[in-house]
Length: 220
Image (cartoon, rainbow, N blue to C red; front, side):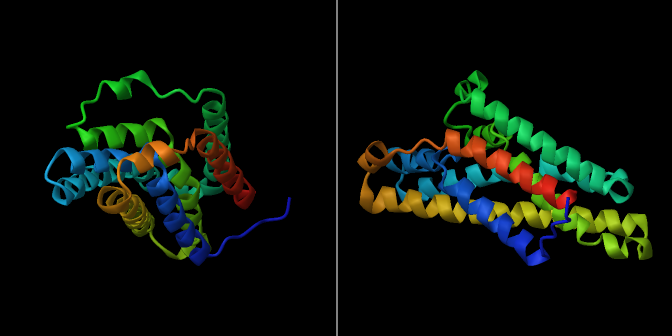
């Protein structure tokens, strides 16, 4: 199979796009921010809820990405790992396609624990997994000069990249979700949610499979 190479700019754009996609998805929490604003002190509580959702989502991204940044095997076995991750993400997407029910454990997290809820739902729905093939693609962009760098410096760079990817992704996610939440809270009204509710579970599962396939193709 011919080798498909994404440019570094393409991969960073993919990080931003996935963040916007996660932010628009109501399953990642923006309706809860609207609810917090309506039931509390308006926009102030809405903003605090968004901050909690962002903190939980960021923690979920780092939990998924940082272990790979610290793997010495990523230097020698990067291509094999990327192939395995691509297959794994595709498999998880297929699982979500068949089983679209939300884990019962999520229903036991109280509304006051938004950061914990955001972390749990990002892990359960594979938000971090969706970002992983893109992150590994960014790490592989330095494979050419890997021989000229010490292992420690290469791991440090991968660590920094994992943090940068997570932060940029969460900023994009909060921007998209926050914009929708403020529009609903200030102008569209809560009835907008019931009138225009869209279920992205099917699209989400297919997106996981698509990102996994893209990661697999670029690794081959």
